[in-house]
Structures are given as C-alpha cells and as structure tokens.
Length: 162
Image: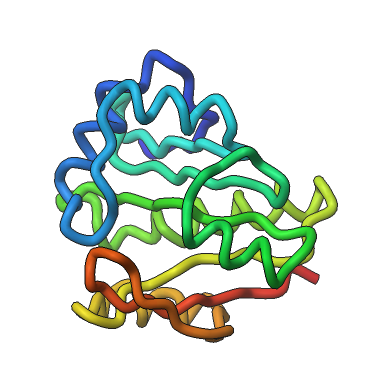
C-alpha cells in the first residue's frame, strides 16, 4: 500500500539515502544538512510503500531563511510562492505517479497557506529530460534560466496555483 505523510526526524536516514541515489541531478545532502533544511521547510513529505520510504519532496516558502542561489533568484522576482528544493522518487518506484501525488499535495497545502505559485529549477545543461517532461505535463513554464557555479544551466520554472 502506498501512503503519503509528513516527514519526521526519524526519516532522516531514508531521505538522505534516497537523495544519494540521484545526487547527479540534485545536490548532496547528509544528515546534518537534511536537519537544517527540515527545520526551515514548509513541506517535507514522504511517500511510503509498505512502510518503506520510496520518495520525498522538500519545499520552502517565500521568506524562509534559506541560503540557496536558486531560492534567492525566485525570491527576487516572486512573492507568495513555494519553492521545490528537491523531489526524489526511488528508481524502483518511478512511473507510479508518485511525483504527481507529491506535487498535488504540495499545491493544495501551499494554496491553503496563501501561496500563489510553485517554483522549481530543472537542469538544462546537462539536460534532465525526464524532469523537464514531468514539469511540462504538470503545467510549469519557464520564467528564465540561470548558470550555476557548478557549470550547470537550469531552467527556472513556475506554475500558478489558482
């Protein structure tokens, strides 16, 4: 059975392990880093199958004390938004609609808190075509692009919640 719930500190090891599996398309996160993000996030949700974490989403709201270049880029341009810092679905659980489940839950809870937009960045160089296609299907549109210190270029995208 698949369930979605709010993460707790007890989920740290599972979330860090899921993140490590996709570190090439997200940023590294150790337990201390996760604890720091968890303390300032608006949403940290976990998808479980039979009690095992198989995916998660971590998001910050406008005004969060988050020192992140992509979050800062959106903060300079937007108000009343929720920023998707990362979404990870374990390899064995991909294609089950869990990304949509997590985004639907985030959209509903963010709108309830008065947010009008969801914001996310997607890798353009090197390309992440799976993420680009998912975000396009979900209704995200490009607001701009950003060259990161790492050499990556990302598409800065938003989706209205109203």
